[in-house]
Amino acid sequence: MQETLAYSVPGANAPPRMGPLAEMLVELNRERPPLARLRHDATVAFGPTMRVERFALGNGLKVLVLVDPSAPVVCLQTWFGVGSRHERVGKTGIAHLFEHLMFGETESVAHGAFDRMLEEAGAETNAATFLDWTYYHTNLPKDALELTLRLEAERMARLVLRDPQVSSEKEVVANERRQRVDDDVDGAVSELLYKEAFIKHAYGWPTIGWMEDIKGFTTEDCVEFYRTYYAPNNAALVIVGDVALDEALRGVQDHYGAQEPSKIPVEEVCPEPPQIAERRAEVVKPTATHKVAIGYRAPALGDFDHAPLALLNEILFSGRSSRVHRALVQEQEIASEVRGWVGSFRDPALYDIYLSARGEHTGEALLAALEPLLEAVCRAPVTEAELDRAKARIELSVLQGLETVAGKAEQIGFYETVLGDPAALFERLGAYRRATVGDLLRVARRYLVSSARTVIHVIPDGTSDEDEEDGTDAESEEAS
Image (cartoon, rainbow, N blue to C red):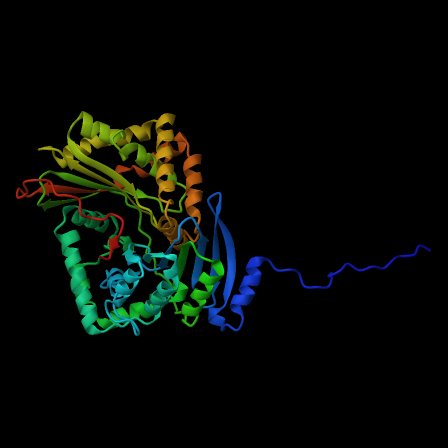
């Protein structure tokens, strides 16, 4: 009978060794209450060399950290999953109003002290609100991170909302609306374009809100909004820069770990019904020349068609060598300005086109000159050379936007909030690179459909001596 030799491997019965992150979390979570305990959700590649570490607190706060020691600076951003799309009829503009209120008094920080304390620490801060999100950002020296976390956590949970503060900020926002919309041609036309294009979806009302709604907000409205949406389980905290991972996470636990989550209501999205006929509106404004704003239907940011349509827009409208600029500005000399933008939103939105006439040319003349150019990209593919140039320009723009810690943080927060993937920007870069001339022909035929567009004609009222400057931020309403 063959004898079997018994032997043991040293450590065979010991628990498996933990990785560095797991060991760090054990130490960080030691004696922490459940709401303050961290878990590691994923390590996400952010380009070829960087990594985003995604964590979550027990109260639902998402924490995304990218360690970048290239300079002794940090960018901290807080992205809330609430924008104007989460409002309801009669309460439009409350998300933007709240952006202003968040720079006010808290239970332990006096009015005006938030900005002053950060400025004294060498930091700069601001915020923005748009259709799908609201975010707050601070650029700071690395040694000011603890202070910034404390202040941000304070205003997330302990903002003071009283009648005087609310009334004061309502007047600030009302004045902002007058300047950016009521007294600004581009702002008013953009607002009208979306109002006419969207019948059901909340994208049809402006981020800044209708004036009657702004004036009608009560302190109780603001308290309800704050308690509902300004909660850790509706926020993503993004930290990018020269930080030690364990120290940054410990600071997050210390300052956010006691906050309770809220019950976020299910969003009642009203899908926009198909548009089967062109919509037109005409407005008279104090402008020196005729203008035309056009809104074609556009896919959502996460849609397969979004990247090819953005490339097509690059070929049509980006720079002096673009097709539309060459034809309408340089050759025909009937336009002084042409531009296009494909909306980058969670739901399907608009492909905005804006034309400003030169001299006495009319909006109808602009439209008549534009249509053959759009028909051309629907009839035949763009050239490979045009597509290659468009890809190179977009890729350069994307990479230039990532040169700073603030640029990296903004892309991480935006894509996490809108698409649920902090590195989706690099997926889009891949989509741009893979796009073919056939893809651009397909999206041109699918979206450049006259029967599904909205057209706003702007007629001069005869009072303006010179063309106005563009004072509207087409992408967000920012706090001053």
